[in-house]
Image (cartoon, rainbow over all chains, first blue to last red; front, side, top):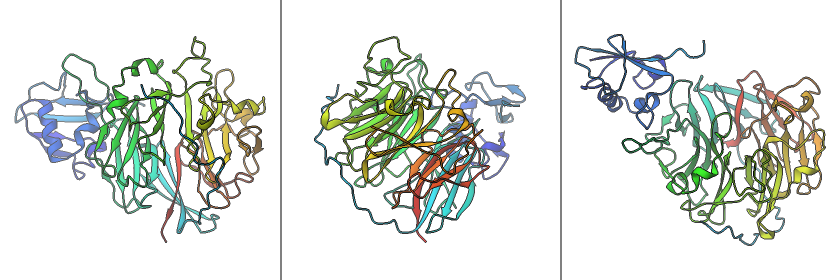
Length: 86
Length: 396
């Protein structure tokens, strides 16, 4: 599936704003991204599995309620940095 | 609980002879928005700023490995991204991120676990431990790395200490509870000190498996207990490199000295500071070749703690007799309306003779003295707010 990457994380994707990911849930997609782009996941999800305070994940334009939310191969996952600070 | 018995002092007042470092002097500057390197000429008179590295990243600590003089280690995060550690062996041309940054273990199902918010402090191991680093974090955690900065593991004896919950008080600093001032006894790698803001100073004599408080005599006027065993707020702890039994600390409640060979109670040497200046501040630097010489940089700790230089007149204070008396050193520094201060990692020496002193301030300026604080000059300005300053040598 298509995963959109925000600018702070593009150092992990070779500068690409859009990459491929796979998985049946959001967290599986993030784990897959981390395999392809090592280090990416820990910068946006802490060691307790919580999305970091100023990061957000959307699936098909809807805010992700849980990293266990189901996703399909044609879905679009959008990782964004929250506007926090004006 | 480890027994806090002191070892016999290596020397009462050793003055180690040290040859001048070979290579150009460098000053590594970590700021709120990136890292910078200042490279000086051999006379320390002209300085060139290079960088930024990691523009936009909060750099809490930026060090050159003193053991190989080529590995740079940086503790970084951004406003959005989590904390990590980067390293470079080519002066920042290329950086590699830790493949396993400091992180607490995942909590069991249904339990609440801690997550590292920032890597706040880095300390290299001894020369006999060439790849070892320690990291202190917020919230208060201690981590160790044995491979030069790539993979970090918990020091469980500290992070899971049964008394840990009682040590820490009320959220600590503005950035939360912090582990800092990690110091390893050069005579014994298993003898480790660290400080927690707030929590106090602690030591381990078994490589980190167990920890004992070392706070007797230190004031904690923000705790409603008389002479608490822990809960203090050390801003910076320093073990003297020439005599590891000579300890200093700049605390939230004053400046202290402790000679382990003579007892276990800290003496408030800040009581000898001028009353109108007080003895509150963050940094403290010791002369590497004289155990009785140390510098502090006081800040206004009165009323609402503005955390600025007292009366807007920044000055260093030096003692040359172990804290019995202090002299003001402000020549070259602004004489009025300079409402900045210096953070705990942002003042250091360069080991040269005469000793060079360096400080980075909250206004993004770097100041240095080539004559042990007698005269100061500005060597960089307009940088972001400075969080750490460290020196090193770069081969020509």
